[in-house]
Amino acid sequence: MEGTTTTILVIRFSALGDLALTVPVIRRFLELHPDKRILFLSDQSRADLFSGIERLVFVGADLSGKHNGLIGIYRIFQLLKRNYSFEAVADLHGVIRTYLLGWLLRTQKNPMATIDKGRFEKFALTRKENKIYRPLKHTTERYADVFRRLGYSLELSMPLPIQQGTDAALSTRAITRIGFAPFAKHLPKMYILDKMLDVMTHFDKEGYELYFFGGGPVELAFMKEWKRRFTHAVSFDRHAGWNEEADVIKQLHLMVSMDSANMHLASLLGVRVVSIWGSTHPHAGFYGWGQDLSDAVQVSLPCRPCSVFGNRECWRGDHACMNQIEPAAIIARIEQALS
Image (tube, rainbow, N blue to C red; front, side, top):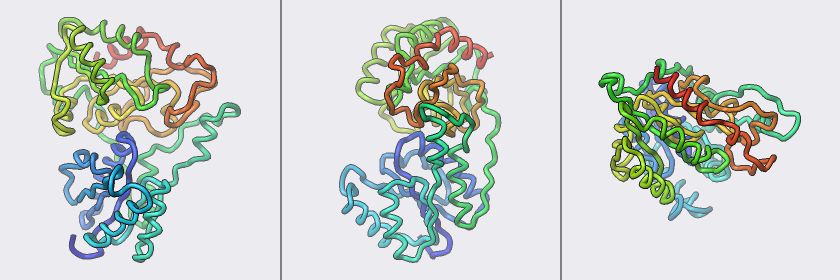
């Protein structure tokens, strides 16, 4: 990288969905600042998410190997110091790893800004009693605030209205392609699979194609069984990489997802998403970029939301936030979206 006045180091590790929400912010920053470049530091497995973005250089860290732990943080610092020049640091993560790395980077006299996650607001939204129930700032705005604190103007323009598939809109509607992503990292965010099967079964008929999305060994086993079970299920190569999977998602007319990475990935590709919410809530600021809130299927309960990330056990013990959602409600929302 040439010069020290043209490049901003951006740091964001963590979950795929959180990382996906950085993409519209980074694209908008580069659009508004054509004289700037981004050096994006993240887990090396996330590189494909940023492919094709001009004036962005991706730096991959091996967080489970040589860049793990305190020594690993120092190695990342040495890697950056030895190979790159940058004028400022934007920490979009705000965790111990990035705080320590930021402390090292400050020895290089780099101005730095760190994300304000709104922890108290989120605690007030998710606590068991005396909730302060209101929509919080969207995560993309929290990312943009980091650049603003560094002195850069950054107004986020909302995307064009989400359609039923970027490329699907150009294809025949004789076949309606629906993606199903019924899995999530944390079980409290997952709809009951037996009930989801009822939803899938409803659309396993002429005029529809069903696509299933998931990644882990258990998820792949479920999807293999669904491929045998459903007449109109479509197979695709799940090991080809993000760009190839993105090509599949862009052909969808609709994605049906939990509060998970697939909601965010489909949103980035301009595909409408019907999302199903349990212990978490769109008010926490993690709703799909550009999606319509009316496409969020959820029930109103005084205990919701009980978690920002869906990693808490149910206080009631009956997972009512998901169990009270009937398949018919999801089917109706899908059909309305497709109409």
